[in-house]
Image (cartoon, rainbow, N blue to C red; front, side, top):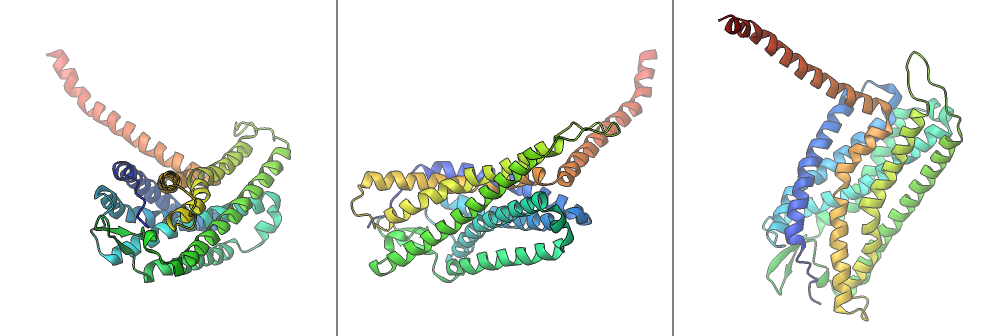
Length: 340
């Protein structure tokens, strides 16, 4: 079976991943800086652990992007070593499923905090966060071992190009069904987590909407219902990341596996091409999660958002202070010139 090509990606992907690299690197490095500065905040110790791990997973993906940009800019011909192909491919897998797991864990954490606040507060939050994070990394790294052990490069005999993790057309009849079964198992795991996230967030929304809106205190001047609105925005942000970044890929992944492994003999070449093109677009959308994850942090905790607001306010005030100092320093000279 021949390799199914999607030529448009060689023009689109380098530009798209270049933007994701710049924005993702800046956003996640800054998020990591903020989370480090908030390390003494006991009130958010558990969710800060999840956010920190999610940020590290995003930075793994961002660090691999320059190689993928070079790959697509070179029209799908991998010019680096097989080891680099294996590592960057595993980073892509690790980021995707660490993000899915940690966003799921954050949803459960928020559900527990809203619906069982006393129970959540009475347990050892830091210890639980560390154990769960270690479990997520353990499962994801174990699942990625295959990417590191098996050869990543496969030659496309028709074009003489070295493909990185795109050699499904070279699978034998003996291995096709094993490969397909692995993919469908991963798809099933995703939809279980996605369903859990939806149910948790629906329960949180129902609990929040059923609570009466508290009156603002005269000393604070806060608008009534502000906390509730921010919590609902956080729910929307988490679900939006799933729907935009991960859901399209896992919907298309099943038909794509059947297409590239030629397990659906009755499908025409045009059908296979459409499925492969859609699959390439969903791969691109998954890259957006490393930009959107920091947005979730802003809604997940008030402390994170307030720290960012305070930090930018200090930077702004510092700039204004510098301008005023410069203006004051120049004013005597201006007065002398006026007198002359």
